[in-house]
Length: 540
Image 1 (cartoon, rainbow, N blue to C red):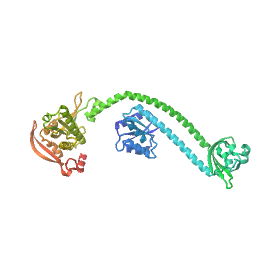
Image 2 (image 1 turned 90 degrees about the horizontal axis):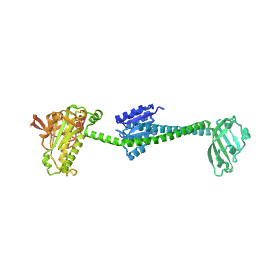
Image 3 (image 1 turned 180 degrees about the horizontal axis):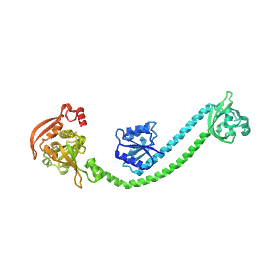
């Protein structure tokens, strides 16, 4: 059977791995994909897959929310779902199963585990679908038989009236058509007491005095036609009390031979399926034990690998870390438009004379952690810290035209934070240090050099100029070069400092950034761009 499988995963690497495993399994799966939970729901409505493999964490709608929506819809509620997750907590797994998932698989995906869980899910789904189809067939047959009971004059339905003791009183024409006997021939052959002939009739009717009023029961019996063929009939027996407290039995019998044959075939198939399911359960137990052994063997390796990858991604940009993992080296890149920012605490050495080394490191960590949050929020890449100096740059490793704005906005936010430190309940215990910030826009080369202790760094004259901007800055201010000014001048207010002599560069234009122009600011401190400003940045 060609099963249809929907794979919903926004992670392209995970998606590619799962599709490759399923395609190379030679099971002939027909595969569909979705990028998020909403797409998965729409695809499931259209394609009606036999199985859905759903990533827990996706944009727009998570895998768990998508499963809950699928289970609400009649068209998709019976589709089994395997949740794909990096969580390994029992609570997480219980949440997924409560939402409607039938199984789960951990990320990164193991090929053997994936195929085993997919095969198990599909076999269980096939079994449930077969049982549902069986129930539908039986329900349809029962409805047909009910209709036949009402139409007592049709040839396929026998109507029989009995005395209270079970003696056959009357039969309709359908009786002769159903069994091949006239009433006389039937009683001559089998006797006149119908209760003795139909042993399947409930015993309470055989000894009823009808004093309890109306009664009704159904029975199924095997009978022989006059021509010797075997028939299965379904009967309904009713007790009717007359006004004089006497009574009779009314019996309706219908041929259900074809339905019985279908039922016997379904039962035989069901027994085969139950046997197969028992074999699958044994196989799953063996597979589970093997998987547990593999998991134990891999656990230490996976943990160490994850720690290494997390450390590498924390030190290096994603594309640089990927190149190092894949190739063993990362090729440097040249950037035409990058904005570099330096910060430095004034009189740091003297200010630390009364502090222990541990206090100095703790204070620097507290300040630089806030700086990290600010630059990250403005899409600026932290490069490094050197003592009390902090260096970052916008426009790397991903090129963008908005980096002069991003870095200047980050610089203003940093100085705003520094101004609040003495008055903040959260940071009032930190030593207060005055900060200088210098910013310059130009070309740089960025990359990783060396063989050990990799570090992402940038080089070029623009780096030196940014440092000179910081050295020439007053505390509490953001000092930018003329090149940065030309990029952002339409949206900020400035104080032109004129041309100032700097080491090895001669005289250069410098500007203090006072804040965003009022017409482009969304806050009184002029630190947050309004909608017009933001739309401009989005178009760069």
